[in-house]
Length: 142
Image (cartoon, rainbow, N blue to C red; front, side, top):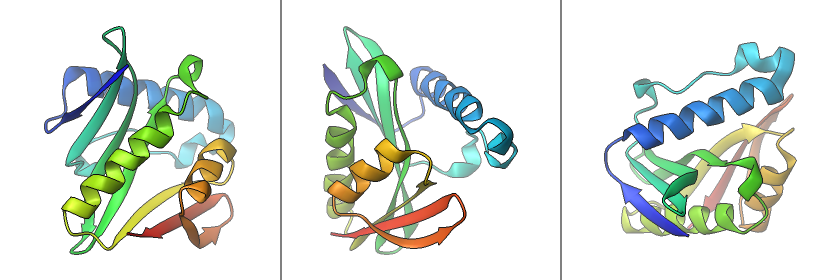
């Protein structure tokens, strides 16, 4: 496996984001009306793509939220590759990058129903800062 940092949204990234969107729409069921598919309006700055045998299997993105806060976006691993520590590795890469950017805090938003993701974030030092229904925001001091 290899992970590559991309500055520009490539065709492979767009395809993986689309797969993530399809997964989320299916996972959320009736709540999918509240989910927003990827668009350039997300203003993603960096994307890390993990490959297995030159095939993209996972990603995570970063964007600046404010002058000293970075944001984790679009963490996704294809289902058949989950449980191998890929998410943790990608999350560590975003944290290192956020540190290099001078961020004091790393922020993320997710749904409480994504239990494996919530567990990963908590184990990585993220604390819940906001909770409303199924929506959760978490932050980690860097």
